[in-house]
Image (cartoon, rainbow, N blue to C red):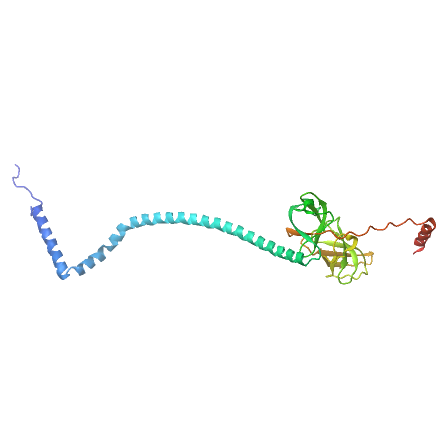
Length: 305
């Protein structure tokens, strides 16, 4: 038989409307009391301290996403700025190198102008536009030719000494053979003693040779060689080379004298072409000796020990 009594697990309380009204009035009363007397300030601080960790915890995902986005944005800007700085650095380095080259060229041009003003002969300024590719041929091509009254045989100098000699002339260009060419020879004079000699090229841009000097010749390391003006090839007293090594071996009749060119034969780009030297009278022709005189000289040579 069914039990007519109903088991009630929850007691029925006030209605929802009554609860809403009650809590609304309670909220208004608390707001009024707090605004007038600040009774709930300490409670608010305690509650704020308690819920602060939860607030930080709930804010972490948003902050992490924001920080991640900022990181990638900053990384992108840094990469772009770094690339721009590298490009600017390359441009600045190139401009700095060009400035240094221009400063060196300007210094050399000032020195050439000073030589031009002090020289007793007329000169023309020319620039090197080609260099002989064959390492065994020490030749340069200048931008002055027959139209500029350049003639074969004219000396070419810089602000420190003789560079070479014009050996071939074209309408707009001229070819210069350097003093260091192995087939070139320059009549020189030792400035200290006045000794006349001939200095030869060795094929090396940093070396000349003073050949056929007896072992007892008065020549020392440090002696300066200048053009002697002989043969009408080079003007007188142009610096050519400096003696850097003297070797004397009694087993050989001649001393081995090595010199260093004073001019920048492989450095400068602008050079001076010296005007032609005043032509000298033709060398007199030596008449052939008579038969008796020739036999006498021949016998004298044989009689010498």
